[in-house]
View 1 (cartoon, rainbow, N blue to C red):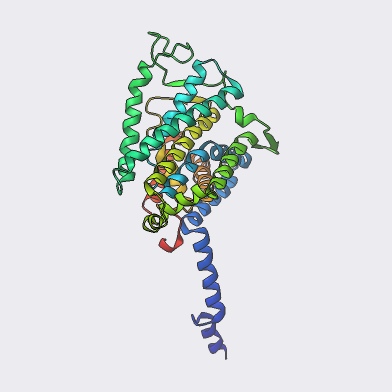
View 2: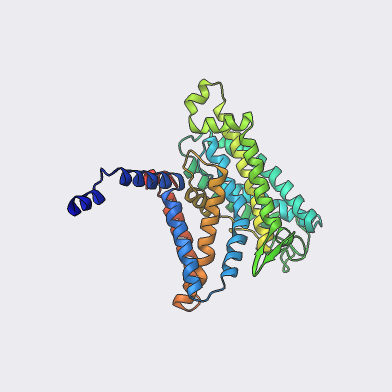
Length: 369
């Protein structure tokens, strides 16, 4: 009986074992193997940080702050994927629109909450226009959107490197001291609208700081886009991205949907860089936006998106995982190894996660794990 009982415990035909395997399979399919791996690694880092006597409140505060800084830029990936152009590697075009909006607001003398709102409005408006043109351009290179988008973003950043030196700005806080012409590489926002959202209605729980205003803007934009998905235009755009042949049979202009998605994505990118800069405390010009699309793409893929399907939850979950990983890896590694290797560790982890996300055919789908 004991031998028979032992065989039943390991027998794959055992109903209880089959039920358990099915439950594990459902969890993997629902959560996604990449998210489980990255999430488990983040938890392990927090535990290791606690063992090394690192302040847990600071690690959590940094993770939440980095999430709020980057979430809108990752959210910009969702309409691009849904409309059919795939992950938007041309995101720097939208970032440049946001940077133009910020320096224009500062040139006009706006500061505080008004300066922030004006920067967002101007950046989003310019970003939408540039996104429409970008979408029309991508309609002519179907099937090569990611590669062409990457070079389009690089070209736009290079063009603006020349433009930042030639644009007729006069504000002494923006231009170079020597020569009195051309915008500086880094512009401080401490006297204008730096940390406006972070400080808005913020509060502490023990040593944990909650940036209420920053998180409020992120979730408000996420909710607004979620409502857009429920509209006729949003559903048509999503259908065009998932199944172009069926969408055309239903009378949907797929090329137009791609332009709409590109415009929304680029406008969100412009808003995202404004949110990022006010939280960072500085505006960074010239080559700073060059590689910012890659962490955003990696975040949304880690969150469970695929090159053809994405949702708001994919963007938010992916951003939280990716930024929590960056926020905890550097101090834990410094504590374990010793010495100032923060930049080296940050580059290894961030680029490693980008590589991991981009080499996955189905993003966070466990079926492809």
